Every structure is written in structure tokens, then in C-alpha cells.
Image (tube, rainbow, N blue to C red):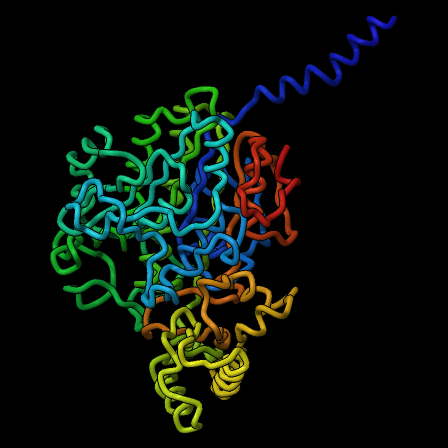
Length: 542
């Protein structure tokens, strides 16, 4: 009888558990779509195939109320937050560029002048990149540690920061695109001594050159009723073409638009990146052994198109219809090369974007533009005329004011100047709120924009006063779209989980970007990234 009970226990509990553990994810593919608004999933849905975004939603798990929990919502902080499971207050990537109070100069989130470019001249700064400014690990780093570095990590993107920050500190490689007259994927010796043979072969094959062709709409432009008129006053377009309208002869326009760099602002940049990513999967044999590998894949061209043409443009609609085809192609490729049900994939964004404010104004919706230089001149004049001092401001960047610490004799003087500047800024109609360093360091904000500001505030790297513009007000030229605020159009992101270990379904509960890395870590059974503050989304996991 005891033997029978033991066999029953073994059958009901132990064996299923063992079987579940053997169904291990061979490859994690983390996709970030640069500047993807949540509503692009629904707005253009009828144009999508059954095998791209719709397949991810149908067979996977969709989060319908997913947000960034900090500001500023830029590319560098977005990619870092997705993969580290925390916000800028911990991982330290507070913007794409920020003013370093100790070096007294602006620094770039991925720049590293101690490394040497691979695939470029040794003095070319476009290749002097690494993740050294990111202060915490990514889940890819934790997977490398967990597998004793047997599980690989490869990061790829058109943008350097889109490849480098997600892949983390221990990646086998990160590759990004260099346009100009080369049209090559490059890296730095932070990762390896030389580019692998397969990368050199890919570059020599002149794949990028094949995409210097005509960009016309994927389908009949008259069917693109979900976006505005093709000819309008809200777009930049390309040099050498009078109107920002289809079609675009890219080869003809490339000379006046930085050569191969023109591809970045077209859907063909995504096509090129996918070609490279698929080659990387094959040549690096990702997902082909018992150790989980990680591929981070950031589609950057969506951001370039959005900045150039705006979120309501025919160009952005065409870009997402074509991106859907890219996603379908990738899923089919992964099914064949890694195995259906053998990999786990997620897709999200690094931030959203605002409608072109001038377009909103023309529709009688409150919106506008804010001139930072005019404000800075007025503020300096006010401080001088008030007898408070000269040269008190070192830098204004990312809606933050950095003060000159050498000008203060006491902490109280420092606090008083913060309060004076706050009072001055609040008199501007376009400024909604102002937060001082003293407020952020001595108050625990648990809701609203104060919480977002605080989660994006790093004591050493952030400024001394942060100001918040009114909704749909930006500091940007009067054409094209941008991002960076704590408003829903910038913070709400698509979030799709798919593949091995993922439930089918959807959720309207509010979750946040830093929850992604802990969820992936739980799925893999590895330690959380060392600065993680997000939580595991248990309803996503089987």
C-alpha cells in the first residue's frame, strides 16, 4: 500500500514538475520598438497580418495598461529600464545626454573614450561605446552569471544605445549601424578584439546598398485612412525633396541626407536590422544548446520616422505596417531555427510620442512650444537684478537646471536659490510644476508627476531644479513628434509576452516597465538584476 501511494505521489507531483523543468527556454528575444505608442497596436490593426502583432496577441499575453514609472522618457533610460528592472534613480541612465557636474561637460549615455571602435577608424567616436555608465546589471547579465557565461548575449540595433544598454555589461557582443558612406554594423573592443568573420562578410555583402531604393507605401495609400493627409505642414521630410510626400527615391536623396543614414528614417532600416539579427542567430547558434541565450533587438527606425514625420503621418503608418511584416518574418524564422515553443519573446517600447503640437493647436486642443533659451536668458537677468548673483546656472538640459555649486557659501544659500528659481519658473504659463533638489531629497512622492520625477532623479547625475511643461507642450521644432514627458502619450507602452512559459490572455491591471526584467528572471529561474525594483507579473507566467 505504501509503495502504491508513493507511486501515486510520484505520478501526480514529482514527474510533472520534472517534465515542466525540462521545458526550458532556449532563447529569450527582447524586442524594443523605439517610440512605439500603445495605440499603434489598435490604430493600424486592420492592416496587420495574422502572423505578426496579431499572432503575438492571439497566442501570447497582452498588457493593456503598461507604463513607464519615471521621467524623462527618452531612448537611453527606456532601454536601460526595460532590461535592468529598475528606473534611472538606480541604473543611472538619466537621459540620452546629461550634464556631468563633476566633469563640467555633457556626456552621452553610451560613450566610452577608453575603448576602440571595431569596423571604423580607431579615432572615430561613433565606435567608442560601452555600457560603463549603466550602474546596474540587466537580466542578460544575470543569465550570463547564472550559466557560468555559457549562455550567450547578443545585442543589435540601428542605434548604439539601443544595442549596448539592453545587452548589459557581460554581453558577448553588441552591434549597431554606422551609416555615412559605409552602411556597416560596428562594435567596440569592450566586447571582443575584432569583428567576427560573419559580421565582416555581412558588411561586405553590401546589404544596406540594396535598400537604397524607392520607398512607396506597402499598400494603396488611399487605404491608409487611419493617418492624416500625405501632404501637410507638420513634417520635415528629406533634403533634396520639396514635399514630404510619397514616393521617396532614397538612392537619389542619399547624397544630401548623409549617405546610408537616410535608411534610418525609413522602414528599410528595420528590414536591414532584421537581416542582421537573423544572421546573428544563425552564426552565433543562439538557442541551440542547453544554456539559455539572450538576443536583444531594438528597432530604431520607428523613432527616426516619428521625429521626422510625426505620429499622425502616412509615413509612420506605413512603417508600422511594414514592421508587422518584420515581426511575422522573425517569428517564422525562430520557429524554424530554434523551434516553436522553445523560445520566449517579449515586445515593448522605450517611450511613446506626442502628436505634433501645431497639429493639436489647429484642432483647438491645448498644446504648444516652449523656448528654453529665452527662459534661461530671462532667469539669468532676474537673478542678477535681484542681487542674488551672476553665473549661478551652469546648464539647462532635459528640463533640468544645474546650478554652479562654487557660487554658494552655505547649504541654506543653495536651498534659497532653488526656491527663488522655482518661484520664477512657475510664472511661465507653459510650465505646470517645478521640483527642487531639496524637495526631491526630502519628500517621498507616492503618486502623480512627483513620483515620476523622483524615480527619474539620480542624486549625482540629475539637476537641481526640474520643471514640468503643460500637457502637449514641447521644446522642439514646430514639425515632427517628440517625447520625454510623464504624460500618458509618452508613458503608456505596448507590452506583449509570447512563447515558452507564457500564458495566453490579457490584463488591464496597471504594471510598469521595470516589471519586465523580474518577470523574465522568474521565468528563467535566475537571480534578479542587482538593482531591480520591479515586481514579477505572475499572471503572465504558466
